Image 1: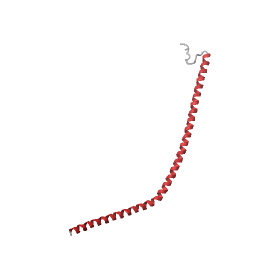
Image 2: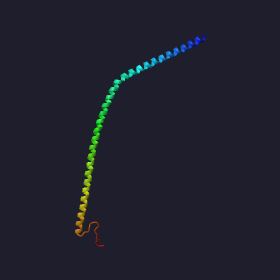
Image 3: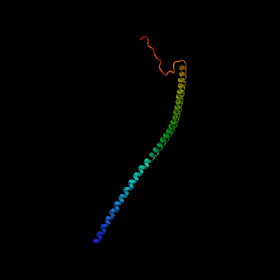
Image 4: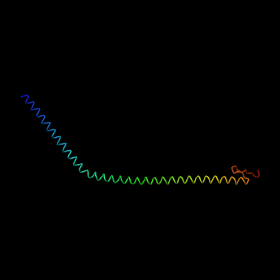
Length: 126
């Protein structure tokens, strides 16, 4: 009888394990079903949200493309303005040098020197 009682005890333990595992599997399947239903409810909203995000990103891309184009135009204008200012400064410097040279020649022919030295002042009376 001892062998039979041990066998019955083991059979009871195995049955209890089988019932416990069955309950765990049923619970997991119910939880999976609940999760899949929630995902099924959320998927249309996610699809809408993703489409809106794609439209927003396309708009941002268009804005950035325009901004890039405008910044290149601004860069071109700025470079042209710098070139024009550099040319104007070069012309002004050449004109100033030419005027200085002409003035120096004119002052030199009138007997006043080159104009680089101050003229002497004579004091009256003193």
